[in-house]
Image (cartoon, rainbow, N blue to C red; front, side):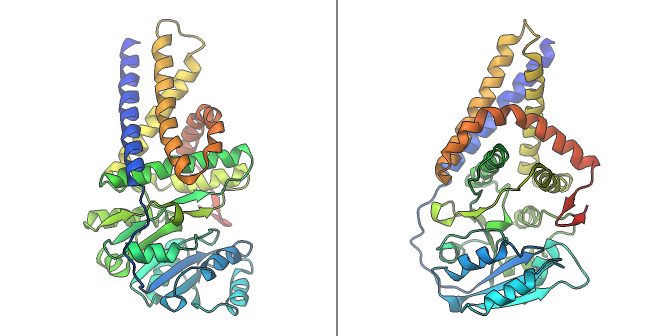
Length: 368
């Protein structure tokens, strides 16, 4: 037993040091508005599938951008929508002044293929991507223009809207952790995660890294592209500023939520980024340890104090990171759910990981 306790103590120490390192990086990465002003052409690409209920909101935010409308274009690529998405978009675009084109995938499917087509049709050298269910800050394009000139890929912050209910708070805290890791590791020069809902890159750099990956996964267009940029020594930086936050909606209902997380987890076996593999592994190991600790606490005597210290250490370091991230996104009230999420998260993570290896799932009326 002493050997097992020693092992889990070492893993916990390694985990806590890693999250502390990320926390320091996230705090230091926060930026003020860039004084450099630029007015460059930007091609905004939005892949769409079955988004008739949400796309208009996103288009409204684009139409209200504080940016020269002659300097950006919108490219919508429809991935075989089964609803009225295309007709809804066409009707709306009759009333806007910025340039917009709608394209349809023909013999191919997937978000990656939609992005490929969008990039092919883009008239500008700067590609900005977001999703149909996103709300964009007024200065989104201006921030991109002011920060993209000295980099090949620009990462922007993304957060769920603050909806009611435990499931929504669970998703909110989970996204905070991912944002903490994304910008915390980025600060130290180890880009690990990104999110296509707020992502910009140079079209030339995309060509140089030979485009998107060839993995047959419904997600990962952003993370795998980041891997290619890293492998080809492309410059990646972020703009972690409150005026650059893109908000999106959490999944409604447990089934939709689990399908989303299975989709995210299914691409993990293709990871090549060592830092991403490290954090995925240490987080899985640490949460497996927490399951053991939670189940053992009522029954052990000899090592009770050690197990309690390990549990509280993990809770403390997680809270520090989440507090920093919640403060940046102005969502501290979500931290009231910290302890129940800590209790549930290890079981959730283990179930999703195992299910991603053995179970199929549905996404946007497609089965994978």
